[in-house]
Image (cartoon, rainbow, N blue to C red; front, top):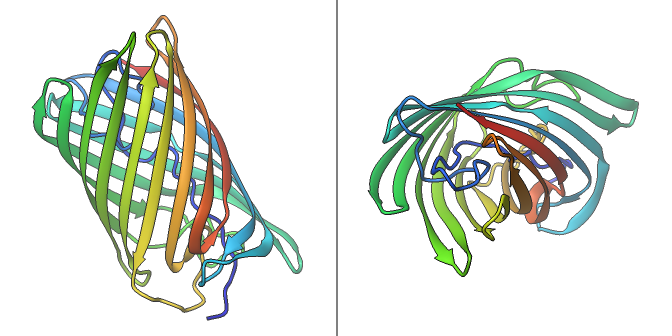
Length: 278
């Protein structure tokens, strides 16, 4: 197929955060649920740039420069101790170099609606299922600098998380597997993600995360939008650090890069966030 270069989607601040009192509240996609009646606000801003891409053979090639700023606040509420609901709107500003100059676009692209049910727990371990529905708002899919796809996605994930003391600190870890149904065209996706973090006993925590997406199909039409082709593979590595302030608010910073894939941009992302539990 003729490859149309694209960038990778900012994945920082997708669904889920740890709610156990001493764990950093910035860990994403985790199995834990929030205590009943508690609220968490996560306010992240990320900047992604890509001037390379992986073609349909996985080879790194040049692409026209892509830039995106995304603000995607996440609000989660503990409906019960075992059931958490959330919402995450995504505002994006996109710039894409073209043969006729630079195309820019901005607006509220989409919103994720999230529900997480804990199925089992013991001590600090938890196993949960999470459902997410992506609702398009104004993605401008046909724009040269599209903000997203004009379609509904539905995803289900199964997640296991735990934490253990190590020396004077503790480690915490989580793994997940998910299936995303992408309606109206693009191929469905399988995701396999995991993270491990370490808190050395103070206010600091460091977290390393692997995020992997696999397109289930072979759609080779020229329908690339924003982040990837209709069917793509993407492997991301992320590293973040958080600092918990005395009032339990946390400040987070990190970086992410796409190190392998097919039909996807080589995105490099920097991000910062503030978490505020209530």
